[in-house]
Length: 408
Image (cartoon, rainbow, N blue to C red; front, side, top):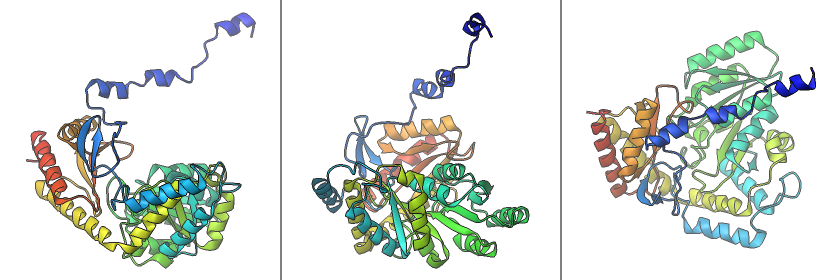
C-alpha cells in the first residue's frame, strides 16, 4: 500500500462506542438517573444525599457496624501504628502481623483450617477461581451469580456451564451431561449463598448431595451471608449444618464487617495453593491496616453480640411480610434483602426517583444484574433500623406503589 493510500484509509476508532453511548444521558435528561449520587454524611440508617436527608434502605450495613465506635477506634489506632497503607502486595512486603491475626481469627470463626485475606471481595473470587480451575477443568455456576464469579471463571480458562437459578434438578442435568463428555477434568460448582439482588438462599443441602455424587468441589460466595446466616453468623453452610461438606467459603468485609476487603476459607493445603497462585493477591497491594483492624473489631462484635443478628432478622421478616401484604412481588426473598419487582427499566428508575424525593434511598436494579423484564427496587435492612424508620419506609413505598399502579 502506498503512503497516499495509507493516508486515505480510515481505521476504526476504539472510542467510537463511547461517543455513541447515550443511555445514561437519556435517563439524566428525564431527571430519573439513579446512580453515582454522592453521600454527604457518615453512612448509616439516615444519610444526606444530594443535600437531602434520607432513610437508607439501600446499603449492605447488615449489622449496623459501619459507625460503631469500637470499629472506628480500631481502624484509627491501626493507622497510627502502621500508617495508611502497606505499599506492597501480600506476597512481598505487604503482609502485616495484623493480616495474619485476621486470617487466624477468620479461620476459627468459619470453622475451617485456614483463611486468606484479599484487598476486595471481587479480587477474592477472581483470584480463587482462576487459581484453582485450569483450562482442562470445569466450572458450573448458577445463572444469577455475582459478576466477580463470572469474571473469575473467564480468567480461569476453564469450561464454564450455567444452571437455572437455584434449580437443583437443572444442576443435576448439567453436571451429568458434563461428566458424560469429560470424565477426567475436575469440577467446581460455584454459587452465591445469599443472592445479592433477589435475597433468596441457595438450596445448599441438595447441591451438596449432587456435588458429592459427581466428585465436584464447592465454592460458596457468602458475601451477603457471613454475619447474617447461621447460629454464630458463619454463613450459609452453618445455616444448613453443612460446614464440613462445603469445600470453600468466600466472604467480604464490605457488608457485615463494616470495612473493605475479602477472604476465602477452607482446607490448609487449598488455601496455601491459592496464596501462591492467585494473581489478584500476588499482584495487588494488600488490604490497608485500617481496613484489617476494622474487620477484626467487627468480628469481635459479631461473636459477642448475637442480639444484633436477632434484631436484623426481626426487621427482615417484618419487611418481607409488610410488602407481601401490600401486594408487592418480592420474589423468593428469605433474607434482609427484600426486592420489589417492577419489571420495566424506566418504571424502576421513576419509582426510585419518587422514593428518593420522599426521603427513602433504595437501589434500582436492571439487566444484566437481573434478567430482562425483571427490573426491581432492591431494599435491604439492618439490625439498627428502628420501627420509626421502617414505618416511614412502608408508608412511602405503599404510597408510591399505589400511585404507579404497581399495587392496588
